[in-house]
Amino acid sequence: MEKTLFSLKPVPPYDFELTAAYSTYFRGNYGTDQFHDGVFRRLLGVGDALCLASVSSSGVLDFPEVRVELTHETLKDEIFSVCLGLVSRVLGLDQCLDPFYSMADVDPALSEIARTLRGLHLPQTATVFEALVLSIVGQGISAQAAKRLREVLIQAYGPSAEIAGRKYYAFPYPDRLAGAGMNGLRSIGLTKAKAESVLSIATELAEGRLDLESLRGRPDEEAIRILTGIKGVGPWTAQWVLIRGLGRPDGFPCTDIALLRAIAMLLGKEGPVKPSEALEYSLRWSPYRSFVTAYLFAAYRMGMPNFGKQDKGKNLKGVSIFQRCERRIS
DNA sequence: GGCCAGGTTCGCT
DNA sequence: AGCGAACATGGC
Image: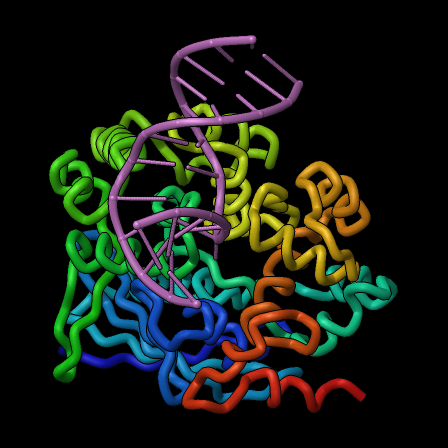
């Protein structure tokens, strides 16, 4: 194993800790991602090689810099740039938040959350395939159940490497999931419908009959049309792929129950908010609705005041990350 | 044990 | 167009 060091400069403002914590859903471990003691780790599949990225902050909010350590078995030079590109994508280093903040600053409902979470970028998956599969797996079940199912899938079929006495998993390649077959996918707890959907996508991808990465070059509406044309992929899933996989700024999964709850709280509504109402209201946030969605989820998970989940606010070794961010409100 | 969770499809009216 | 059922799992 070799180690190679790099330094990258994210677009400011960039809160490394907050963004890395968000990528693990404020739980320290989530699927392929780990964030402990200020170090974010993720095993990356590059071609037929594996590379562990260990990332930590070496800057501050408005002058951000991250230190990237790549652990690998003698990689070719050109592979490094691929790895760094993936790190940048996964941690959202290149996103510019300024236009979103300009919009949020003058929105009474949003301004406090945006200020509190200033520097939170939107973590993305390494591939569109990954976002799609993770979303399908998480359909219609609780966040806890989704986390568990995703982890089982990754650990059962993802390539792994043991480094410094610790085991890491990369996200499964399409051919591995295709090879798992219905039996394999059912056995980890997917419904028949989800297993069929994942299997068909993985198979078509592995056989080169489907190219999800090419969605990056298409406009939102077209990407949605193509995605929802896939069996098992509805509007909710397509919007999350837009946000998590394609890094688009204006995704909005208006049928998401947790998002609807968050919006109800944001607007101080007692009863449930209907998807159509949420969608109509959200138009004022366009074209930055992906950021709104993520910031609402983050606020919810961090247990911001009047935002539910107070008990879950303590994470990262019992210290509420909210308490750290709270100091920003003047 | 029942019901709701970060939905989608299919088969009915 | 709109409604209900089935689907697997986790937590309360």
